[in-house]
Image 1 (tube, one colour):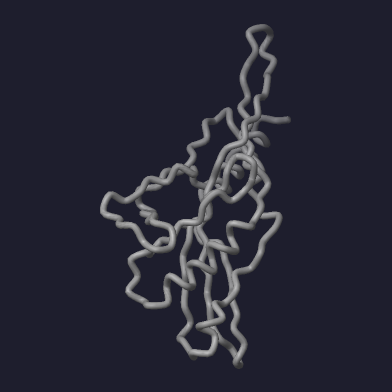
Image 2 (tube, rainbow, N blue to C red):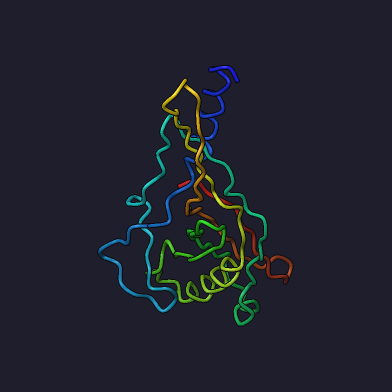
Length: 177
């Protein structure tokens, strides 16, 4: 493979990983426990993977997604559309290990019910593992060896709950922090 092709592939992979974040999300020191999951996401304090020039990655793709269900107790209340932003934390095997609320201190009385629906659904999601490949030169003759390691990662999503034509709907989209 030519050097320019390798550089293009590496740059593409690094750009794709810009939205991936390590799963060891730092907790904001000012957060307090909530009745939903007790963790607050502070997007400014999360760290991103920094790929070295000799590293590439692949995977971290959603393979199975259960959509959140609009809370039945709230469906008939003619509420304004509700948006929930959450961080989905995925382990090295591609299983969702946690779902974190960006706004657990919301003053909206229904926030906890909508977030609970998001959490219940997202904990059932499945991803391909994110695999980091590291190229290393061997001691003799400039040959290269590659080692592969699965890494945890996290992705941010925006969930929109609304009632359209008397039908409760939920839409989901990935967002870049």
